[in-house]
Image 1 (spheres, rainbow, N blue to C red):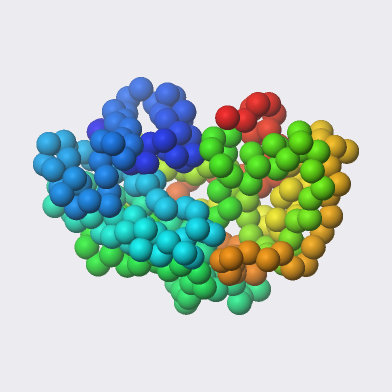
Image 2 (cartoon, rainbow, N blue to C red):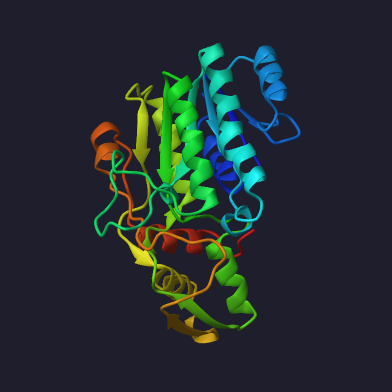
Length: 286
């Protein structure tokens, strides 16, 4: 099977690249923006005219939640129109699309885990742009998987894990919010779930929630990072109820994974266990 991975240099793209090394039977093609620009319909159309794929894993996205508030057009261009371009190309070429979305399509007003069919109501530009992308895919494609995930981190790039480890080295005093609850999710686990979906030739298409198990506040997440990396004594870590951000965020965005576990055999891992493993495996995050 030939598999296209867009956004190849992002954290999820890199995690898929690592996981792909364990599957030489699959023919992966990793493409960055220089190879296929999902913002540009012509670029996408021409690329698919010249290349045939069984699956397309679209990890390309505008992910800066804060910056999206003041760069709405850019966020919608990639997260909504870009998703539309990919959906059209996949539909025209009979390619199965695997697309990544977010817990931020919800407003956070529930106090129990969100199911796939719960009412969507994003409260920031990033969430709105990703929801629009979802809607385009559902309208255009018959064969697709949309995986909504949450609080994604890895050993690659700019994310909460790497930021906290850097700040620990610099011995900063840190005030971390407790007013938001969600589930930290190891991008390597998501990469594994995506590849398992392909290997199993699963045809239960649709929207799924995928994250690690359990829930936490950002403070819980930070404390576990410092505990597992044995740097808790290097930082002055304090809780804060209110932490001013430009983008409003849902106060509760834990995802219900029942539909995923009913349709897939890939095991879910507790967020703390997965965090501990990535810290042990990658003492020097990239």
